Image (cartoon, rainbow, N blue to C red; front, side, top):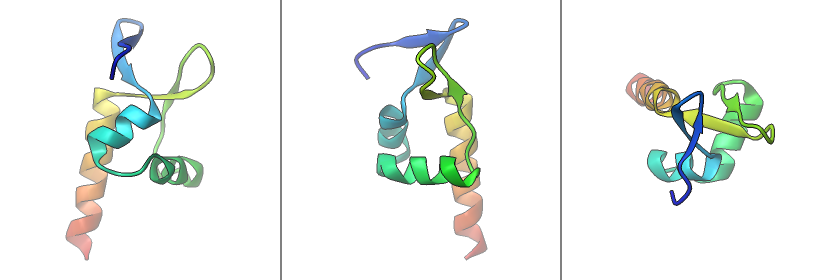
Length: 69
């Protein structure tokens, strides 16, 4: 997490950085993204980025799925 990026003064994380925080492989996040299970914002290069709130929402969603098993 070397480069602190911000969009409208909100800190954002790349898919790779989010995968480290969430403890999953980055292709897992791409899979969730392609299936429409996870939403992301876009940076100036049109790459998906996640805010801390997005990461918290994903964690909540994952925990809900674990509880259903």
